[in-house]
Length: 278
Ligand code: AMP
Image 1 (cartoon, protein in one colour):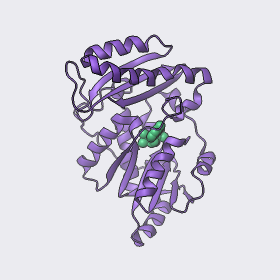
Image 2: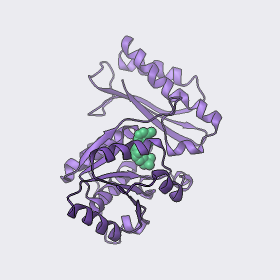
Image 3: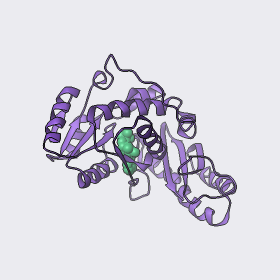
């Protein structure tokens, strides 16, 4: 397994893979890798010949300076975690490799999809995500790119960008990996104490409770009851919303065929998100 720090050296490596007719998969990450990331890498390894894993904490998607500063960074550990596998190439660039001086990015119009749910609480976050993913896609030029449904809204928005920019890249959405307890795996969990990890279980418990509520109540009433349940715990809720999977519009009176419940909450100083399809 090789580690590339510059766009130029990575491009050379990818070109030689492509010259051998190898298909390229891409797993963008911000590092502090865990089994959830590994699941994306394994899925990619099962579908393509060569997998590029990028490790880059992207400043443009953080709207909170302290959150960016406290984001865990552990490149050497991440490299070890990915293990020895010739099919994996790691890309660990500096800022200037991802955002060269002549870089420009025009805001992508998403009909407010980037301003609701996460976008409402993290203004500018999704345009930052799209900027870095666009730049990384241009560097890696993969056949397929793998994203986790843990960041459900991100998957929807990235698919929109790929359509809009007509990138010939298939976006593969992968299920959320959880701890045995049900807590969604996240690099941010490293900042939780054991006690906080227990308290954070209220997120998954509430999501499951919503499955029961769906059998009896319309979305609006189910949401109200789920919030009451959530607030019996110790976390501070930012939002709990039930939305249609495709349009991301809130559901009030009726359930649609595919609906997802999304929760964002703060545990101690750590902001956590999770969702399930219900
Ligand atoms: P991050 O490093 O947090 O930017 O995540 C990189 C990728 O891994 C994103 O596509 C995430 O959605 C995905 N991911 C993060 N946590 C999980 C998880 N628990 N299960 C599945 N995918 C995940």
